[in-house]
Length: 404
Picture 1: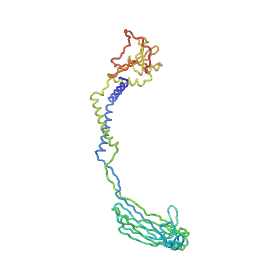
Picture 2: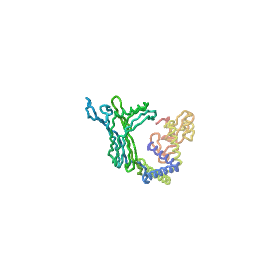
Picture 3: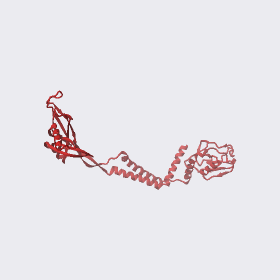
Picture 4: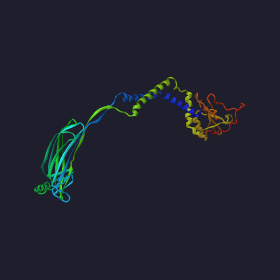
């Protein structure tokens, strides 16, 4: 049996001593682990726990936009009369004075719909001044109706179209005339086509009442007029509902609960069984041995393994009660502690005095290593001074040597 086996046996005895001294605490901890594992297992696998989940059950989108075009009325080298210019950002006041267009509204709904759409198209002329922070001052405003279209039973994907036609060149001149009649206001003169769309009916099975507007600005100057759409009509939404679905857990909780229950339960049963059968019993001799081994490990740097001459040839020997006390002596005398495993003792060899500590007997089953590498149990160890073959004390032991 080597030192590694002895160390394993010592650790086992130390574990038994720890469990014996802390039996109630260890049993309580194992039962708590089992209870925790049981609770997690029940909640995960048996309780049928659910969680609330929000799901979209229907969705919709709607959009409205202007389309426009202008027809060339005079022949030029660039454009022939009758040429149609479509969806441009710039048109010509003399060549294409009239702007024709339409406002188109459509929508989509995942669960169907039926809408009545009323589209009103108006020419708006006004003088307006921005006053900061999104506010404005309107000095005057004039509206001219261009068209009004009612579309009934509009299904998803169908279009509600409201055409219009406006002489952009004449509208710019009229706006300037009106502002002149007002004496020339400090505001900016604006001309725009405004489409207002009112919707009612059902969409995805729910009632709808909504109204939106979109604006097509017409800015004239330098022989052209520029067209730009602002306030584009786009919107979307949906309906959701809350449903209860089975809770889902990761592998850590799914397997961890049963594992904790198993480990805690088996551990508690094993601990109770070990105590009742006496396997946790630690004798006084074992406790003394464990205490010695702990101290031996703590002061290992001060201890050298060797062979000590017969004490009969040395100075007087003082018995020391503990290994830690012997190490204190070694420190005070500036000597080392010599562990003579054959004698089963540790000694400090002072000049005029030797000091000796007899280590406790090893428990049954633990074998101690002798100085020559052989092993023997506590019952076989030579405690008395070594003798020669003639029966006389061995005076040939020589000085202590470090065998580490």
